Image (tube, rainbow, N blue to C red; front, side, top):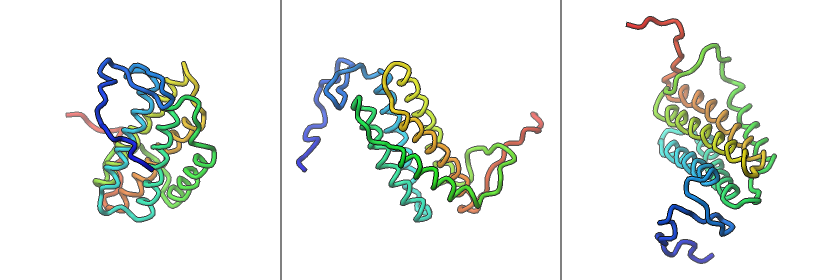
Amino acid sequence: MGNRLSKIYTRTGDDGTTGLGDGTRVAKDSARVSAYGTVDEANSTLGLLLACDDLPGDIRERLTSVQHQLFDLGGELCIPGHAAIDDADVARLEQWLDHYNDPLPPLKDFILPGGGEAAARCHIARTVVRRAERECVTLAHHDAVRPQAIRYLNRLSDLLFVLARVLARHAGQGEILWRHERRHP
């Protein structure tokens, strides 16, 4: 394959527009650009999580796979009518969710973000994925978004929540439980 990006700056976006994958030009603050831009941001937060040295190998492998799929999802959102995420991708996330969640103790309280560096980074990734999901729902109000894309992001945020719990235990830090009955000074 030849060079895809031989020149980084083109000046074509200086007027506040950007080109979609199908060649259409849209405003940089359009719902579509916000949706795929937030998916890209979510992918970057996974990169930050993957930069942690002490991630278990199976989690590292699965998160790397998710990064590839998020890149595909960004392409799906950037090219109207394109399909890249399918039901099998959502089902795979559900299998991983069950695998990691089943051994965990049931939740009785809300969990605050934290529990060690990797767990905290995982919580950040989770919240950005949730925002990407909201951006896709917003886009779906005025343009076609395949339901698989929204379901994928929904399951991914769930998976990241569960992985944050796993990583807090892996770090020996445990989870930080929200204390609903506390005194304020």
